[in-house]
Image 1 (cartoon, chains in turn cyan, blue):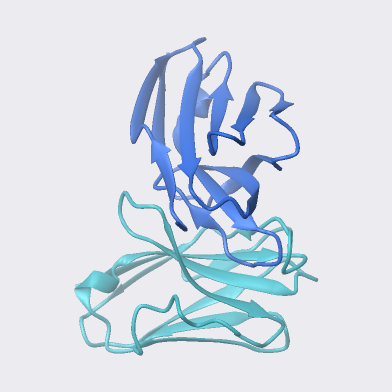
Image 2 (cartoon, helix red, strand yellow):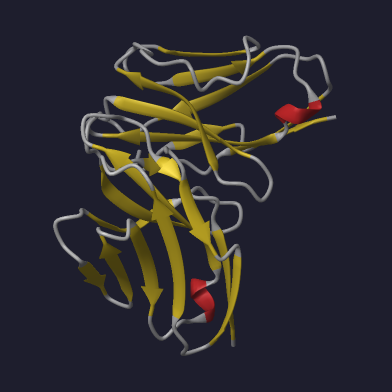
Length: 114
Length: 112
């Protein structure tokens, strides 16, 4: 694919339900990043992957949030027992190299928790 | 010390005018400063970036000015066009790290 893709593009869920957000990085990009963008706010770093490893999970807001990456490619961000404050746009980015690599962003998944 | 402060929060410019967005940082270890442009419903896209070894970088109508001693950098959009209307984010990162620290964004509207 030409760029980073994310699915679904929009997700509406009820409070307390679990959701899974998917990210397909640019082919060959070893680093993958998840960010959260709340309405009118900047980008909040959540987690990054180098290959399949996530050395730093300190940006995850709570233990309801988890992420995994398989095969050094696709990544899934899971939010368990969603809360209304989880409503935001979740952005994924990838880069060719972990250090100094320009991050290319996907279009995001717009999550609304009712 | 990890923060990047961005201003203004919003900006309205007439077509053909100059748009100026400013960012300031504290961490002197930052050595890469990208600007991203985000249209509604889209992810941020890299616009232009600079390293502190130069004071200015120009790409078309977009220029980054960098003041290392003041720990400030700014984006100038010359001959602003309605198509430039978007949200602009500055960011900073440190060599050897993976994390971009983003500013809070500036919503630019260029009037036709």
